[in-house]
Each structure stands twice: as C-alpha cells, then as structure tokens.
Amino acid sequence: MKKHTYLNFKYLYIFFILTSPIVVKSQPIEDTLFVLPLEQYVQWVLRNHPVARRAGLLGDQAEAGLRIARGGFDPKWYGEWQYKSFDGKNYYNIGESGIKVPTRIGWEIKGAYQFARGTYLNPENTLPKNGQALIGMKIPLLQGMLTDERRTLLAQARLLPEMNEAQRRNSLNELLQEAVKAYLDWSLAFSQSEIARQAGEIARIRLYGLRESFLAGDKPAIDTLETFIQLQNRLLELNEARLLFQNSRLALSNFLWGEDDSPLQLGQGAIPQEVQVLSSSDLPVPDRDTLFQQLLSGHPALQSYQLKQEQLELDRRLQKEMLKPRLDLEYNLLGDGFDLGGPGGDPVLENLLFENYKVGLSAEFPLFLRKERGKLELADLKLLDNNYSFEQKQLELGNKLQSYLNELTTLREQIALYESVAANYQALLDAESAKFRIGESSIFLLNSRENNLIEARLKLAELKAKFLKAYYQVWWAAGLLPGI
Image (tube, rainbow, N blue to C red; front, side):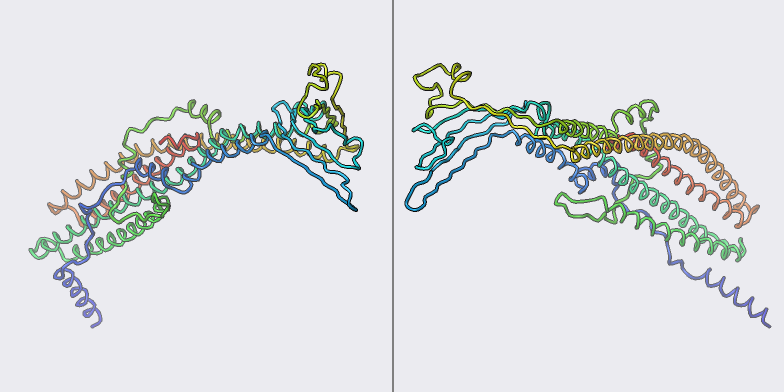
C-alpha cells in the first residue's frame, strides 16, 4: 500500500513538471547595457580618486617646502629702542634699527643705524651727534663655515620635488594595483555569470524540448525530471554568480569618484570587458631584463629610499659640523651719521682697514659634546636603518617581479592546455548530443558532458583572470602601472 502511494506521488510530481509552465528563467543581457573599458576606468580612477588627487598635491607641497627653506635667507628687519627717565632726568634714549641678510656661504651681512642721547650714557654707547650708520658682517671661522642649518635645510628642500614625484608615482602605482585587481574580479564575476546564464538557458530549452518529446511519446518521463533538476542546479549557480557579480561591482565602486569629490555608485547597466577579451588582446610582452633594469633604476619606492638617503647624508654632515667649536668673527664699518668715509672725508678703504671700525670674536664649545655626539650617532643610525629598508624593499620587489613572471609563463601554458580541454569537452558534448537525438544516448550522459564543458569554461575564465592579474602585477612590481 505504501509503495503504491509513493509511485502515485512520483508520477503526480512528474505530471506537474510536464504540464506547468516554467516561470523561473535566466535573464539575457539587455541591449541597454554598456561596456566600461579597463583603460577608461583606469583614467577615471587616476583623475578623480582621492588618493590620486592627494598625490597630485605633492608637487605643490614640494614647492611650498622649498619656499620655506629659501625663506631662511630672506633679509630681516630688526629694531630696538630703550628710553629711561627718572626723577626728572633723562638718563638715556638709545636705539638701533637695521637689516640683516644671511648669505648662501654662511656669512651674515648687516646694515644698521644707531642713535644714543641722554645724560647718563655708558661710554661705550656714546655716538656721534648725528648717530652712527654701520655696515658689518659676521663670518663663521669653524662651526658653520662648511654648512649650517639654513644651508642644510635648503639642500634637503631641493630634493623635495624629486622625492614627492617618486612618492606620487608610488601612490598611483599602489592605487592602480588595487583598482585593476577590483576590475578583473568584476570582469571574472561577469564572465562566470554569463557562462551560468547560458548554461541555464540551454537547460531550459532542453526541458521544453524533452517535455514535448514526452508528450509525443518519444522520451520517458524520467528524462524530464532529471532535466528539471539540472535546470534547478543551473539557476542556483546563476544566482550565486550574479551575487558575486553584484558584490564585485560594489567593490569596484570604491574606486569611482566624481569630479566634485563625491563617491559614485556603478550603475546596473555597466558591464566590464570580459576576461576572454582582455586576455586575447595584444598585450605588450614584458621583457625580463628591461623590467629588472627599470625596477633597480626607476621604481618610485626605491627612488624614495635613495633620495631620503641623500637627505640623511646632509643631516649627518650638519651634525658632524656641530662637533667643531663655534668661533665667529664680526666686523662693522662705522660712520659719522650716514657718512661712512669718516671725519674729513678720508677714503673708505683706509677707514675700513685702520680707522672707524669695530671688530670682535665670539667663541663657544661644549666640554663634553654629549648632545652633539648623540645627534651624530642618531644620524648614523638613521642612515643605516634607511639603507636596510632600501635593501629589503629592493629584494622584495625583485622576488615579487620574478614570481609574477614565473606565474605568467605557467598560466600561459595552462590557458593553452585548458583551451584544448574545453574544445575537447565541446566535441564530446556535440557527439553526445547527436547520439541523444537518434536515441543512442541518455540524458544523464548528455548532462554529464555538459557539466564537464561548463566546468572547463569556468576554469578557463578563472585562469585568464589570474593571468591578467599576474600580468599587471608584473608592471606594478616594476613600478610602471601609472603608464597603463
């Protein structure tokens, strides 16, 4: 009794499949869809992404830094005035005003005017009635003669344009690495969803045909049930593929920004270039020797370390200079009022050498030099640390470049092999389809052949996506991705 009930239920279910319309269908590609090419996408990212825009600011920052360093040599006005009155007496009224001009050779030139009046002036402050103009200079004889903080900062600032340009290129290189990877993930997801859609459409058409054949008495009912299950599996795979495609589109949208700095959402109508199209295009074949030469000589990350090394060398030179005693010579040519020729109109040169001048020496030297020796030691450690980082980065990039080149070679061979595998599966499916049409095969064998072909197509699309990722990773490791 139970067996009879089970058979009735089974045939009722098959009857339902045969007589009911199939309402779940795979959606074909609409005519309104448009292709977003990889090159156009990359240009959009380079133009509007915040990281790219921030990288574009580095040139302006370098100019500002250089302007700051040059400002250390700007002429500076100074002034000082003191007045004392006590108990109805004018003790003194003295002042000085002038301009100091630092020079690129470490000297400081000064031009000033002094005045001094009052009842109780110190003798050294006594000046001519008309005041006293002076022209002088301050010359470092030991510390500061070869370099000083102002000259070091200027020399370091002159490296900023190159450093910021290297940093800009490296930022774009890193940005495009992630952006291209997101595009290829999107492209692979689209290719897989298209394969799943086509497979679902084939299964649906086959089910319609088998149902008509069953109703005509040519095929058994069990074939329709197996084909229906095949269609259900295809629709499940299609839903999973479309979910992956939607999520990959969202990941891609992270790299799309408007010209008004607002984030953009990629529309439903946008589709990528398929991995089959991208991998079959005329990609420039990377030459290993050229790539490694570019890596060693022009990779922006390595250039940043090299330029930083130059800056640290300049800082070390300054700290080494600080170990010397400070000994400064100061000379001022004095005038009567604004007359620098001296009394009686004597020649200026004669006064410069023998009369009307003030000269002095100032010296200073820390006895233990702990601060100076500590700074020099720290400068040496920074140089060593940067050199270690440079060597490590160079090794990492070189190994990555070689690994991606190896991966390219292997993937190229695998793609050629799997294209042959897919072609052979297609031939088997065509032969099985012909045998099925004349009644010499079963729907089970036909579905099995088709499953093998679909798996091969999915695997081939995955291999091509891996090949493209490895291809662009090669250019990333060589520091050339902004040139896409």
